[in-house]
Image (cartoon, rainbow, N blue to C red):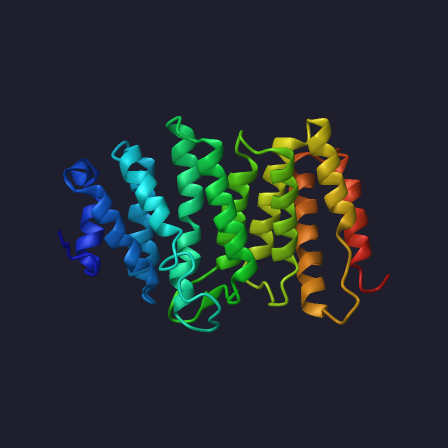
Length: 273
């Protein structure tokens, strides 16, 4: 069945009628909304289509036999990995917004008691592969709105890292991917460093009360060192990320012992040291 999902007025009207959502064949509707994530029109892509997907995941309308195949589709070569390797093209919108399906899925599975190690690992493996393959890290694109792939990845990493099913090896891999994103050689100019810092903060808060978690986090912070091969942009991104992480802890817990470790990492990136 086809609905006028490219009609922004129709979409806006349907968003105001959640009582009618369960009258739709929801898998088909979700898939049509997913296609809209490739649009360069920020109203259609972000404010309407993604917002409706998000609200459906937060509503009681979905069931496991809808969510499982939809998530599988969102992670495939036509969505999360759509035209992977392109830079400065509109294909980034489909890839970057497909990333946001991962935290929606983690939250839905956890809330409804369906989060299994296999489901979590499938989402994590897809995200890690995406992060290492993506080449287009633009934030805000004039006239077309947010791509924001790094910020979306931060949200997804936070969901995975704070999941109750996260193991020691998952924690290590997740914070390493945060460090990778914080050290991109593309200037992070649109609050990406703050989103990455928030992800790191939330993950640290979830794991720093355990001995193994505290050791893993400490080892990760101690391993953050500048690239001395002339990577000025990458080093600057990491420095800004660490500063944001420092103040995130300072505002919440001014006496946190993590402040010293983060300050020492910042010092290593000090261009005047």
